[in-house]
Image (cartoon, rainbow, N blue to C red; front, side, top):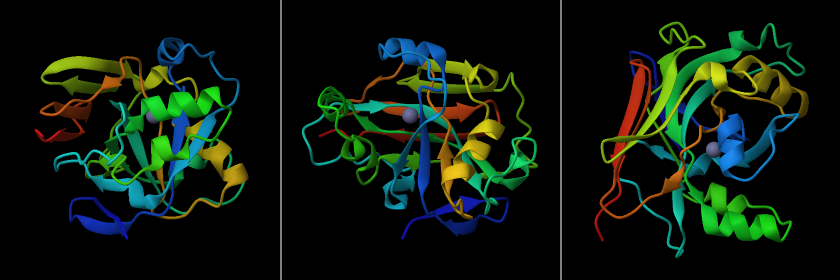
Length: 220
Ligand code: ZN
């Protein structure tokens, strides 16, 4: 069972399902040689993929090219089915950041074979996340930036306003197909600039000045 921490008192909340959005920034879709989607691209990681984003990354025991993807992550409350876009943001419990770690070579092979790429996205430890601040404390706007630094160099940087599908739309969309529960997470997609992780790398992800995570890949 995996827990995240939430709010000023550090309340522990059990993680259920991790919903992730692919290709939610046009320039990232481009760097993946992919077109901009007409509808949100949704995939799922098991809740057990979630780990504390402030401890060293444990790379999976598969000989694979693990890529970082820095993302804004939403902690959801229970969401009624078929929630309207105009109401969906009231079911946001908390806001944090995370890494959607991806075994890119396995994902590429699966895509080429027309097969599901669950293993490449959902392995143990594939979803390091920060602490979550309350939605009231998270004063985010279209100009709030999501930034990933690798060894002190900015590799990913975009504003929330650059998302193809805004958070309100994503929650409403998911609620049509899934029963969203308190403790579900929503990874909102990654900006361009994804790349591989190597032993000894230091990685940080931050959402403006609001919240951040900082981790490293151990030396072998
Ligand atoms: Zn992602």
